[in-house]
Image (cartoon, rainbow, N blue to C red; front, side, top):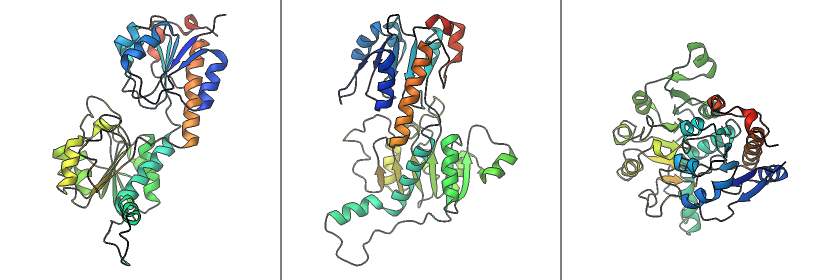
Length: 335
């Protein structure tokens, strides 16, 4: 039996690469320079499987170039970079990696919150620059213990952040498109608010909503002006949920006290971004899932999703079961 051909748009941790290599002829884009769209289109022309990352846009043009493609396995929980409807229409199965990065991302959200509140990055720069000459440096931060946190999006990661916040005796407010039943709110020790009221009442706002047409610039200039002047914004979900120009203005003009940001409207973040020159924002380079444990498990799951389809089986985490109405799984079996 001919081995399936698979293209990997960026090297993922070794458990994933090794597993795919056992069963498939694999081509990996190893360059540190991100893969451009034309090279992606060239590479998928004769491939049966594709492993991608969130910076790869998989749209109708890519799918047009890949007539043999049976499965897309994305190394991510988010899937806004994929044209799911178009893939489903063509009977291309999609696997993704929900769940495995929940704790890593929640940890990072809380790390950003603490770092911004206590001015950790500023303190590091202050110390390294030799400015620490007085007993009490002028770097006063804000308390986290007993404060109020507002969580925008109470899915897996939002709930994990809520659990961490309760360890700091924080009051937890949440906004979600669908309100939870009262007994579930009580069990989670959370209180529902409209988005506007959540922004008005919270000392810290942490965003964990999915990206969609409805959530683009969910946090805009108007809503930033609702926040307390002593409040902090944390975003570890998707960059386009926050209007970066408005956020930079809010930080510069001190409508809010600070922010911790891990995701951006365009990645990598441009060196001339208005966020770059501001001291009251902590910036990290999309590190939400960047623990060895989370990334290795993501890589394994990405490989397992891909190989399952090539064996004619459902992916472990299947994003588009509707694709099977177009092309039965049994018809794509190659292993």
